[in-house]
Structure formats: structure tokens, C-alpha cells
Length: 74
Image 1 (cartoon, helix red, strand yellow):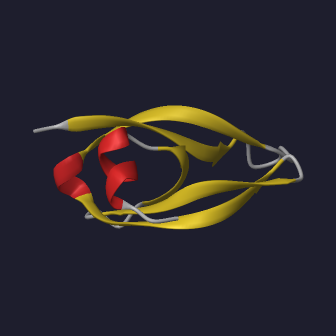
Image 2: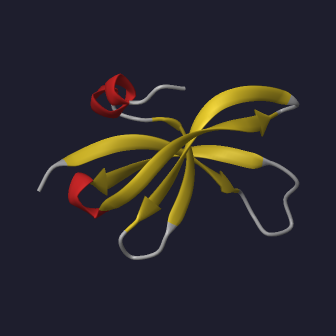
């Protein structure tokens, strides 16, 4: 198994108005797809990534391992 560190955007709380970035380690074997997207954070548009895993979970990430950045055209 090979794991990589991703910085994902998650809601702090259901009642909170903002988002927060959290580090998460994902097994590379579980990644089904990853595509570049634009994400609005604090009123600014930033480049990000939409990650889908084999268990059906989906994440918005602002940082991904360099291994994946090299193969993606944003």
C-alpha cells in the first residue's frame, strides 16, 4: 500500500459558515479519479482537485502529492 498526504476542504460544523483545510492520508489504490477544478475559498478562486475514491467518498482538495500534479494539466 502507498499513501499520500492530501489537504482537503471540509465543513467545520454543520452550523458553521466557513470551510477548513484538513490533512488526510489516502491510499493510492483507492483513488478512482482526480480532476482539476476551481474552488472558491474566502472569496478567492483557487486551483483545486475533485477526488473520488473506490468506496464512493468524494473530496475537494487544494493540495495533492507531487506525483499527481505532474500528470495533470490544469
